[in-house]
Amino acid sequence: MNKFEEALKKQKAIIIDGALGTQIQRNGHNVNDSLWSAKFLDENPKVIKDVHIQYLNAGADIIITSSYQASFEGFLKKGFTQEKAVELLKLSINIAIEARDDFWEKCDQQNRIKPLVAASIGPYGAYLADGSEYSGDYKISDIELKDFHKKRLEVLIQTKPDIYAFETIPSKNEAKILCDLIEDFNIKNSWISFSAKNENFTNAHDEIVEAIKYLNNCHSLGAVGINCTAPQYIPQLIENIKSSTNKPIVIYPNGGSKYNPITKNWEKGEISPIEYSKMAHLWFEKGATIIGGCCETGPEEIKQIRNILS
Image 1 (cartoon, rainbow, N blue to C red):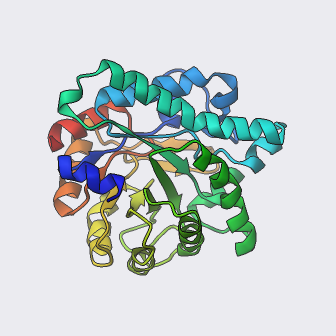
Image 2: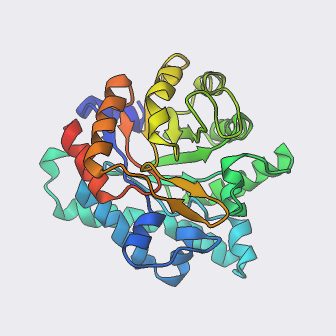
């Protein structure tokens, strides 16, 4: 039994946290950097830990680490040594574990499961920081792409996170490579979530139904779903996913905003935290059981989701 199955035996839904980078911005810090929130692993790790604690206090059952945009290539490009890159990658997980353990020691443990730490593994395009994470157009070979992810995974595995979150994956091809690595490393507690351009296609224009069918045959993979996608597409996306898998469905869309890769800003939507939680209830009714928020969502959205799903 994997971590998802264990948790879903105790409660009907698992609540993921919300955005890390945009919440760091709301807390008064500048994340406009090729490393995004991962830059604080070197500059000020407490900035990251504070956000983890905010989400735990809001009711998150899973906190996702600051490793999304962290990679050997990204750190080396910024002038760090190989040894420092390893240190910072490990720190991204250890900060979250420390935040979770500090929180758990002080909280009322009667009314919730012990929160889980999910190591974020973003797509190759997140390292490029040029918007290609939303297209999957990398112009590298599959061998190079697998090596990129393998090097980072080898380090993250040493920190023993509870879950591995392969997130914002734009293409079926990158997901297939990740599935190979999940099997190679015998990773039991993981999800792969695609980013989608609409109800039927990933951002790389692969059919969601076909992409999920492929993932359903990845036996070690624990859950599948969608993140970093406009909320209005989620109900039909869940229907498409349900038709193609028997794995738990993970859903954590954006807060109604759209990312502009030219200005590197999120163009604000109009969805309130309460409205977002009502949509989350609909996603649950449609069949999603692991639910949270991505970019432009914060602790208030997570608090409202917990309220409405509990």
